[in-house]
Length: 159
Image (tube, rainbow, N blue to C red; front, side, top):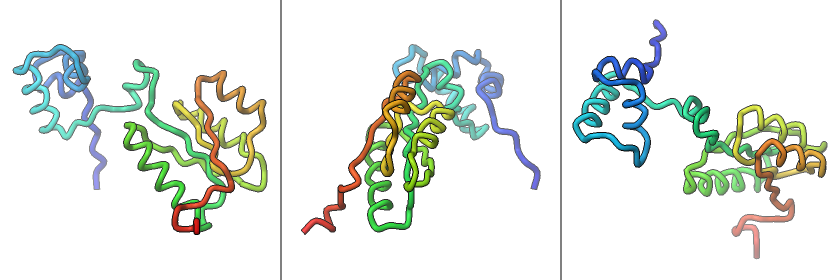
């Protein structure tokens, strides 16, 4: 099977007969664009199976809408529930989780800081511990670190 190159905004612009910046505006909420141009661009995008590149967009917006979720063991009864709950909450905010695994027996600052390589907007540490120095590093690099309690339990476990 031959790999097909993904369509770019330039490809859409060429097919629609508009500039690349016009394509970008058509996919930006609230941007000023005529209904006729939007229709041409969206038709060209559909014909090419074009999807805007969220990573490329993050270069200009400086927001990835990614949240690093640092988890240790995933085989316990609580971790899948926690990840599902986090995922639903993040989706409601227009965010996507980026799961980063760490060893819960050691400090999770390495995986927490490694999540920043993906330009996450925040980091949630769900197990283990992160040093105050790592928290300061996360904050200095623009991420908002969050931590969950190890003693939390899903509603079905509370009786």
